[in-house]
Length: 159
Image (cartoon, helix red, strand yellow):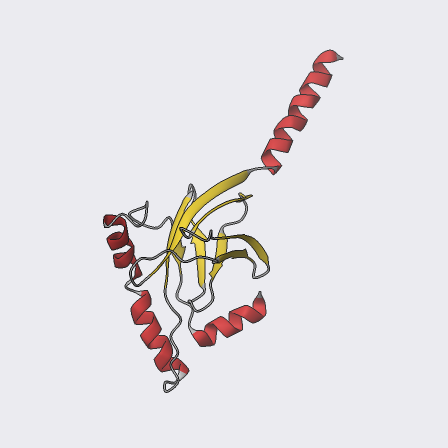
């Protein structure tokens, strides 16, 4: 009887560990121009749950979230929203945000083309920021996808 009790307790313990898996993410969010820290950036899941906000000195954050979460939305006033997809083993998020341009005299398509051109420069900027000591990782441990304004509006309806 004791053996069965011990085995049952061990089974429950391992089940509890399996369902309670979390990961800790640390990181820094900087501006594309001058690599300055951005304060007050929200790190969000599913457009509603705010996990954390960057600190008010260095633009850094630390969050603990379930292992099942593999995408985050990064939001800051005056900056492009960034939807990122985390790679396995990712624990250091170094993120560069671009300021949101105001293109009053452009169509959405022209604006998206201009924004896409700047978006494609981000990997090179990440390496440059790392070389200058602003970021801790040489390459991001996440994937990001450019979201055109027209597609982003449709995506927001889905969320």
